[in-house]
Image (cartoon, rainbow, N blue to C red; front, side, top):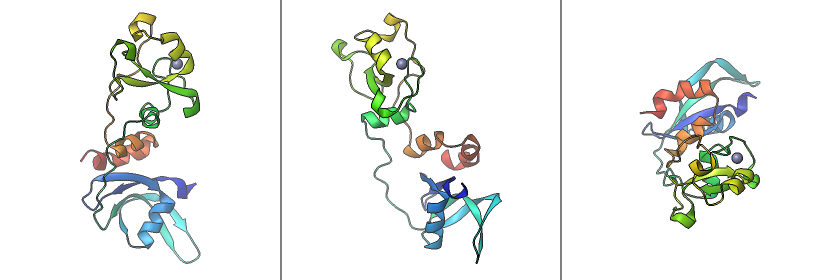
Length: 172
Ligand SMILES: [Zn+2]
């Protein structure tokens, strides 16, 4: 579906702030809240009265202050950071079937921070209990860390080719 393809939204300052759908981007363009920065040249949306090249990157005309760019630390965002994937066995599950695991267990002084908490399936959580990963043969798929910008995290969930085309805006 063309209208559900992702569009990178830049602030008036060109800072990437959001990823929305083509549908939402077109509404912002029509209401003159944004302008097109890059288009998907090969894709055109036709209605009875007009043709529009599908936007790839748009930019807001007015600068908006975004206080929520920092990720709040909570369960849901830990799952998002880890792509809902158990960081020990790699299984992917819906949020309701996942839990968070303290890499250094709380009983041994481990803290509840981005750097010490990972997404974990119930099976692995039970097996690991109050041990360190190395003590039960577990290997972390990637070391837990504080996530980067919210936009970058959203981008990693989008189609590889889209992210490639956005790259120069994401790393400004
Ligand atoms: Zn697991």
